[in-house]
Image (cartoon, rainbow, N blue to C red; front, side):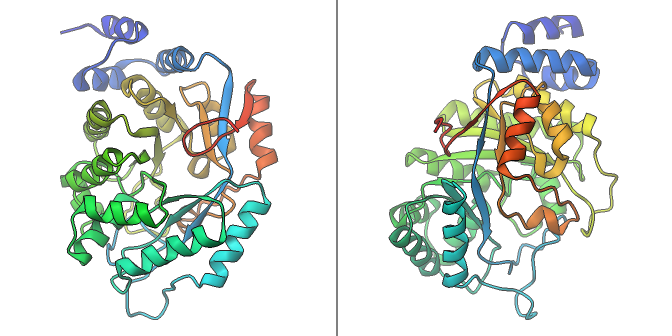
Length: 352
């Protein structure tokens, strides 16, 4: 069994840590040691002092959802009359505005709406592609899994149809914690961990890239955080399809899970460990949407090399009472005042 000092040295030599080793480092190493190791790893992978961001818009095409996640303050159950499905006119206006603001992609996500068939999604994608030259980063694994089940198709067939209709890449949402004993408590009707991973595997096998996320600070223990990251790392070994990892903290307000909100320091510890442990994922993204600008800026010294999206629009986290909005100029200023060079990127982390 390695001592803590040996584990710190091992991480400092950029050697792969096993899950139990990473858990021990997380529990026992002091805050600044983790910052140092994560920062060292970040500059090992990205020697240039560049921090990237993307200009996009999060468009929620529907808020009607049967998942009933206890952490979500955004969804409406079917049949209650409060839900919506976006009109084509509203969709077009949002995309036009995104392009006018220098946006290169839209993040298209919604609920598991039982009234929408696969034809709805393919028509939606084709309509966007017919009218706009924009990258569609859309439909998290639970949505795709739900589409497949309601259509009686396999995951691979469903992804092939969506891809052919204009879908370019898949966001890593709906992962929460990839441990079923926790998932069944926080999102009982959502796909299981193995199904989430299978959507990503099939997408990667068809040449699509995706991001991966982790929402922590609800009902999980620290061991589950590392089980989650281990599953992401294993799939990445197999497919090399993940572009980035984005850990973020659960926002408890207006939800059905009463827990104390994670502090900035707790968030930064997990962020640093994700950079150290996920040795095969190039990009680690800081979540200013849940953390605010100061912690997001600090995250750039804890392993993060990307600040994510300017988020022209964001509804889900805002429904939980957190409403940090950053215009592009402010995001650029944050990066510059931290001593880095801001660069706009696309979904594949190509600099624009």
